[in-house]
Amino acid sequence: MTEKSSARRHGRRRVKRSPVGSSPGTLIADPSASKPALSVTVMSASGFKTFQDVSPDDIRRLKSEWPTIWVDCVGLGDVGLIADLGKIFDLHALALEDTVNTGQRPKSDFYDEHGFVVLYAIDDDENHRFEQIAVFFGDGFVLTFGERPGDPFDPVRKRIEVNGGNRLRARKADYLAYALIDAVIDSYFPRIEAIGAEIDQVEDEIMECWEHAQMGALHHARHDLIVLKRWLWPLRDAISGLIRADATYLTAETKLYLRDTLDHVSSQIEITETYRETVTSLIEMHMSMAQAKTNEVINLLTIVSTIFIPLTFLAGVWGMNFDHEASPWNMPELHWYYGYPAALATMAVIGVLLFLYFRWRRWL
Image (cartoon, rainbow, N blue to C red; front, side, top):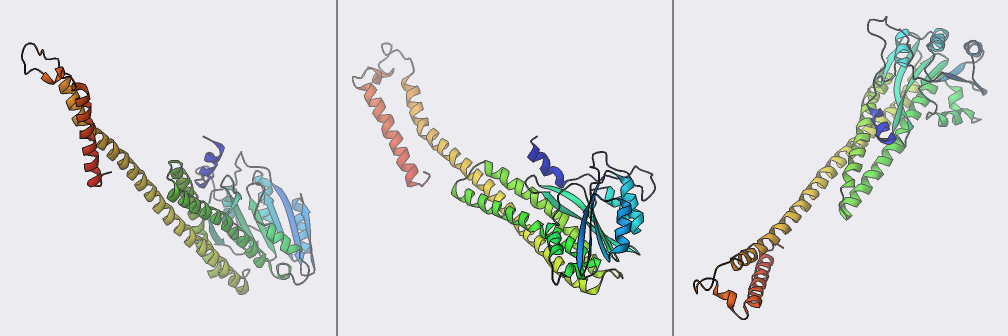
């Protein structure tokens, strides 16, 4: 199996669960998970600062000094560090367990002091690889947990750096959480558009010149659309849950922006469904064209065989070894002076007449 074909299977992820019988909220790291790297962005209406490779003690200090703090944890291989973050921000144990046990269904949960959202981002578009992103947010803080380096948050980071009338820095943490969630959802649009371009190209190729390899491209496109559907449908429910939530740390103004995010998800679902129908139609058309070509070949071979049947019959008759000296009725034409050219001429006339008849009946 090639690396690319193996990567396509990341759409069917295994959920990494705690051992059977363990207590709820048990944190067990995946042995293959990378070690966490923490980065912190603190902000206020007047400014911001960003810190790399911080410790839990640094986070406690920054949390008390700034009105809004964003902690970005990349890597889930150290459950001790994740548990420390949970204590600092009073995160629920069940939410932390879902963070460590990747492969969760996209969802949104709400606790007394914070909200929790699970969603998926495309972290390797070339190999169609997704990673789980967990977002915690409450009064004055946002935490994001990713499996690997690379995320769609760069547009948000650039917006934080803009000076003058910066809404991200001036508003509460729930607006920052919205911006991060919206960035993940918007990152699906380029992939969806790329799939649409691939489908259009294959459709043009099929109409221009049918080939067997086109079926593989269509199946790959359908697989990618199925994976997108798997993450987008529950994600729409998660965003709807955020809009309906009755939590003090989620303001009505932020919910208005989340409605726009919900429109984006709904639009992506509609586009993927349209593309899936298009791919299904193209697969059916490709199979019909393959059947038509097969029938065309069979028809041609049948016509050729039909033309040669009487010729083979004549050749078989004239090839029988009867003794002419025993009886004058035994193949007298074999002793004709022009017997051979007459036989060839007879065969040629029969073949031409059959060919003209097939053309007249429009079988050719």
